[in-house]
Image (cartoon, rainbow, N blue to C red; front, side, top):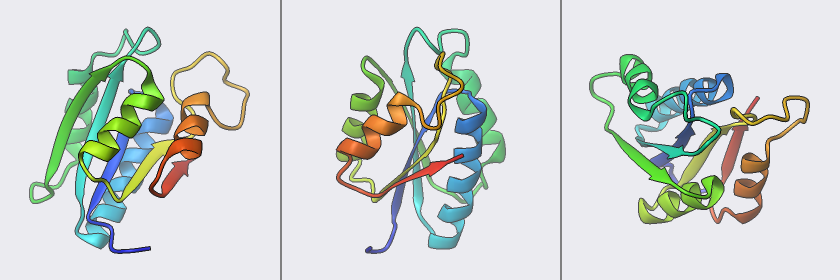
Length: 126
């Protein structure tokens, strides 16, 4: 794998998403990588607006770490992959479970779809 310069982190306000943010911050520090955070608006996360999610992330973000926010709507996995392509991300770090209804399954449908269709490495945080 080549040097990681840009990491994409899908966020939705879930516990899994928060864990992914923490892991991405750690890896970005070690690799001196830039971070892109993407929030995809949907019926599932409508109770947690993007600005609240981004506020929580920016509180954790070191002042010298370059990071950008992206807000999309539509099909979640497709939107994540589009941002990864547009931003030329080297890696995606995401939670295994989001805010979906099926809490008992090992990996969420969005994570599964991103893993299957991504052209770049995907790290799934449990």
